[in-house]
Amino acid sequence: MPSGRLAPGEEINENKGHETRAIGDGAVTKSTALLPLVQKFFDADPAVAAHTLETMDAADGLRVLEALPGNVAARIFPYLQPAYAVGMLQKLPSNHFVEIIEQLTPQQGAAVFAELGAEQRAKMLDALPERAKRQIAEMLSYPEDSAGRIMSTDFLAFHTDVKVRDAVHRIRALAKRKVLFSYVYVVDAEGRLTGVLNMRDLLLASGEEMLESVVRKDVFSISGFTDREEVANLLSKRGYFAAPVVDSENRLLGVVKTERLLKEVQEEGTEDIQKIFGLAGDERVSTPLKESLKLRLPWLHINLITAFLAAAVVALFQDVIAEITVLAVFLPVVAGQGGNAGAQSLAVVMRGLVMREISPGKARQAVLKETAVGLVSGMVIGVVVAGVSWAWKGNAYLGLVVGLGMVVNLVVAGFSGALIPLALKAMGRDPAQSANIILTTVTDVVGFFAFLGLAVLFREHLLAAGL
Image (cartoon, one colour):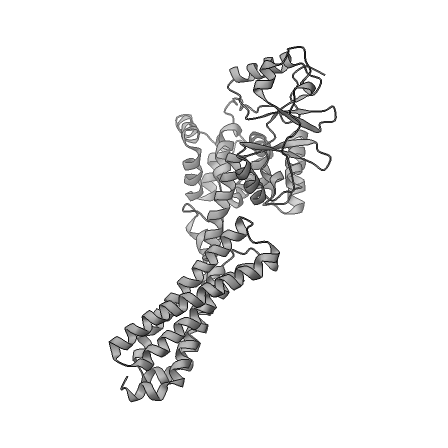
């Protein structure tokens, strides 16, 4: 065993230059004048290049990718929408496809292959070199939101029988190449995680000592199947830059970096925000018009159905509204307050689910708490709006109807805002998926029914006042 050996995954991938060459059977003609300019664009800002490519006609975008060397084209794939990236890769010649995939990290490659069907995934994996195939297949074996899907296989680890002086020499050599690691791990002969090295201990130890004698064995590690939100909580509590990922036999598989984890959680948070309002989680500003319409129109139709449902409730009371027209003035007030109050409860509970503050045993407590908040808020807002209504029209019964309607709506808003995401999660569905559309429907229907129903009960008193 060589001294200072890096464990599997230690290799530092470096993009190698590729000569520009024709791809396919002469179908692509490259402009020697424009190609260097395009390459510089891809090098300077791959994110902008990716977004620009997405706005182009698919055939034109494909020609651009075919014209570029694989190592250049690969730089934009982390910034492309997965579905778009897969569509492009499927149309590329097989040799160009392999060249691009080899330049991606295993995580990026797994994200692309996750978009494929099982049969096509197996076929395209077989086209890859064995090492890339094994790494991507291993990533895909983990659940989508697990630590295994986002771990990096670039880590530094020495075996326990390596001498201190050899380890220090290897670390210094890597530092000269600007290759730095937050932590250096130690593994046994079978690759099982033994501990982590402390630089102070390493520098103070004798050069002839074995790493086994200086390693700190109280190392924190996580399973590859741990949910990434749980990993984020664990790392935030400990303040680590990274955490080693191990299998069931404690073999070191990779590391989850806090920087990448925060990026993943942030992206998931923005996706959840979009889903709450009936948007696809992966839609971007650069998404083509046709694709945006395809993603949005189904939910707009659902929202239209729910709007008609609320309108149907109002239609049930059209006679009383025709007699007491002032009621129409308060309909948007009741609906707006209910929607806002429900959105507040929804936001609190969604955060609790994301941060894992709401365990299954605390779900009932969360619903009761938000219902109680809705009741108290409804009473306070109800008194205010009742006073305004009474002062405006000089009729106490109008204030009573509006005030009680507000109380009922805010109680239901608090209850629904907490229950909807919890119910979706219990059913195995994404709790963020269009929760706001469901909530708005509930608060509108219940708010209108309660307000107008109370108006029917006090109809005679309202009519007597000439309203």
